Length: 331
Length: 169
Image (tube, rainbow over all chains, first blue to last red; front, side):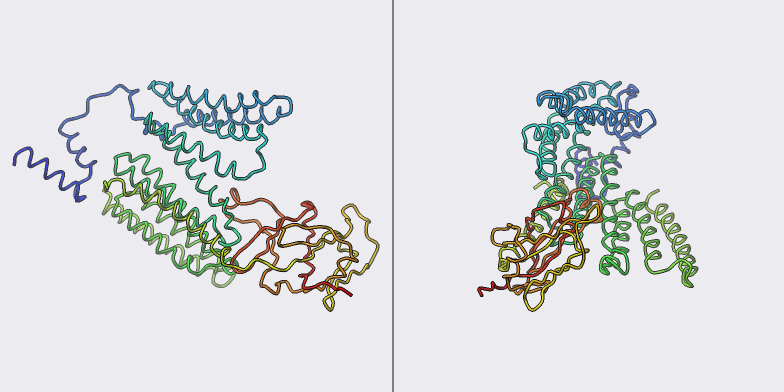
């Protein structure tokens, strides 16, 4: 088989989904091992999700800095003039944004740069709110529901497009989610659609799952898995909550549909070969079993020991199934 | 269209679709439902010593004790709410007695006064309206907020009756 035919065959197989990008690259890596890179030159995605104690402390420190600035502005609201309030809040946010971009390019200061970008995002949200308050345009719920997340969503989407920094993409997704919930809330559907918050969470979860799928297909597995975890938790969590609590706030449709949704997630894990789906699918099934027990069995009643035995057996069964599926499809 | 972009297109379509569905659910019934036609009277204030009722279509206010005592006692106040203008004005007992009232919770044209109870899920708890107490005129699949004065007193809001007529005698 000549080289060009081989390449065409590989393209055809990849197009049909018979071979993934990772399998192909893994095979090539085994023949052409990657050149050793400097310890500092790591992909920024891995840096972002590598959470050890120093990294967690850095992010916590950044959040504390933000809280300090927020309290500084709020406690001195009457003594500071408008320009000072905006400078402290929005000005600091923009300054940290610039500093974060510069630091992020240096491998040794990548984590610090990400922390600066996180703090700048929080400060810019606060700063826009301060601008509106100084301008006397407060009291409108759409300011914090639509305007602030809308401006920041566009800002970080454009920033990602220009600078290709994955942190901006995560912030854009975060502010986009905030914007989505804000728009729904502004329409005030609570009087017409009961549990609108849960349905919005359901839709948000599905969106995150599809975004995660898109990133996973591009080889960004860490970001993809993070979005999968968020999306599936939102989706299954909302579906579980929609079932209500028997006998009050009870919704039989969602109560009955939930096990099928969980099984659907588990089935998807086999198709996508993704452990996040498998783990969360089983976890939520276990939570569902406990929920059913709390709703329909009363502690101290005659049926309580029966429930405990059945629950324990179900958990053993689920654990066995998890182990078997993992061994069969994921090893 | 590049198949690679389909998941992203679906991801953005889901929230857009939900927003459109919510807009349709909120505005379409309002477009087809008849506007509320009946004004109503409500009262706020101290009910421990005053009894407000409707008998034979007339407002009856009975003093059952001496009010105004106690730290939180507030005098009874009556308001006439105009559904066309979405405005309320305070009225006296004498003026209120001149109206013919229907004490049923549901008006003759199918509307009721409901309050805004807090939600218990995270999203609606954070993003939803936090104006408790707030009152809505709801019916025919629609719900409109009623603009009532005296925010702090609205915890003692009590619907009295729908104004179905006026006594000209």
